[in-house]
Amino acid sequence: MAHCEGISVEKNLLIFLFGILVWFYPLSCWCLNLTALDLRGMHASQSSLYGGYSADLVIDGNSNTYLSGGSCSHTGNDVHSWWKVDLGANHCLGSITLVNRKDCCSERLIGAVVRAGMESDIFNNAACGLPVTSDQASIPGGHIRVVCDPPVIAQYISVDDDVSYLQENWLTLCEVMVEEYSMEECLQTTTTDMSTAAMIGDPSFSISCMFKLMFVDKQITNARPLSVLDMKSMLRCFQRCLRMENECWSFDYVMTSGQCRLYDVKAGDLKADDQPGCLVYAVVRG
Image 1 (cartoon, rainbow, N blue to C red):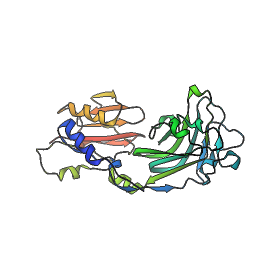
Image 2 (image 1 turned 90 degrees about the vertical axis):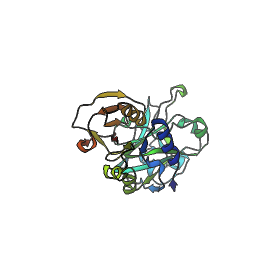
Image 3 (image 1 turned 180 degrees about the vertical axis):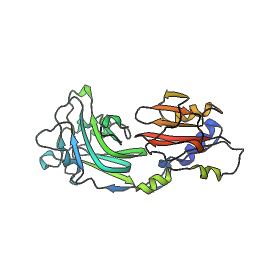
Image 4 (image 1 turned 90 degrees about the horizontal axis):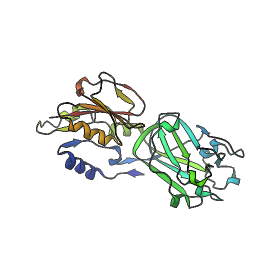
């Protein structure tokens, strides 16, 4: 299955907003193949256990949507119920599908949030897509597909549900199915290094260029930031850096917290170390 949309729109939007040539290719704008990730045998857990319906039943390859079929998980009525699977290694995730219960109570998935990331503590991982809507949850036995756009490299996938107005937070899942991109395609497509920018060869352009790998867990370590800000998205962090002409040459953005740190370090001097959930970029000005 291919995921390909939006590349010309996004490039034109960035040029219009900033008046510069933007050398920026989000993974969602490339045509790549999604393949099913086999979750069987991976370690699953949940916030509590009801009636013997354990977390591993969600990834047994059986999408029977009747609880009596013995292939659905079921938590207790927890304050904040959740389900989680450890993939055991990094995977580049494109979509996650929840299979809802059919024999009753499908509405219990209203507001459920799918998360994916590097943290075992699921609440430190960013959400993929939007919470499950009432229309999606109203279909008994429905398959609710949540798209991670942009795709995310993750070791943990989770579903959590905390809808207080329902006064019930039982979480039942009959199957979770995951589609991924190959790691090679994922990393190659989200990489633009400085040699690529140099190939443009026209100093009259100002080029904004990703340094290192997008979605790789890195943070800048060899300099103090010019400023530390809270931003709702990486793009806003990028915008702020561009406004600081001849001052900001690089930045990193922490997805889980929204922390944006601006630096005066140029690409050739940039060093980065492992830091989960942190994206590193450099801005090259012609």
